[in-house]
Image 1 (cartoon, rainbow, N blue to C red):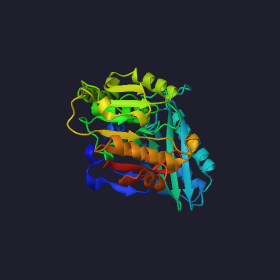
Image 2 (cartoon, helix red, strand yellow):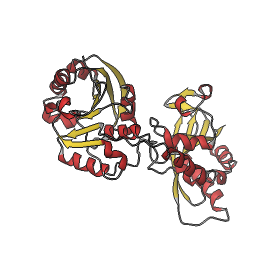
Image 3 (cartoon, rainbow, N blue to C red):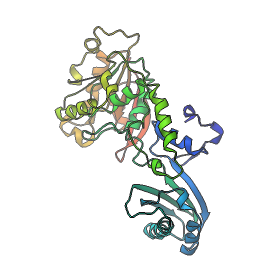
Length: 360
């Protein structure tokens, strides 16, 4: 976040995220550029309420027409802990009616809905916080992948693993279990200096306070800094025909993907010296792996043996390379036999790990 221009003293770490103070233009900029968060909420009110009557008065005191487009559909995300008002559906219904009454009273109101806006209501010990979702679809959705394979890795996790491995625009990347290509696409965006949200839309774009010209200017400035790699620097492969077909369809829609070479290969037959033949590079590159695990590994005789084979392959042919690998458990690191730093991750409802290090 500090790299995005957010002063350190404005940051407060909270359960599940961070709080910070900024102007709406900064909110737009963060949505466009930040690669790690899932969403950015705008806090608009906080108050105490221990009855529906008090809740209704507080919600009605907010001038909603300043925050929401009149012709919108509302969604609610409500949680309540240790509060007298504990029924989340009842809280949502009461608030929705009050907000819609305000919006529909405006002169410009029409019945045609133009956007979906999500309101977050959090109650704890009768203290309520009301926030608007500025993002819309979660930020890991970059607007690039129209086709996906089974159990795709989230883009924000791919970015985190690339960052932990020290990935830069000078690095060679081998993505030998690419699936629908999350590691490769994220790396190509980083190397091309393309903001993570450049190809997608956001909820804030429909807010009355959002300047379309300002956001268009932000994107124009970003586009002027795009960088086009002249060589293939990213080598993606998989043995799954369906996954490769989906990946190649995603690649065909964007010029920045020209730095990616996608082919059908078995990881256990890959020799990096063959891939990099004729390519000038100063250092060993990075290999990123998202092996199948859980139900996807039923035909692999269990996680342990499979990860043993991966470890052997890395030590044989990728010595000196930096590595990032998705691990379903701590035991998988033991099976690999590599000295890796474990980073906890939460993905697809599972607590998993990223193993980051260098092959020795």
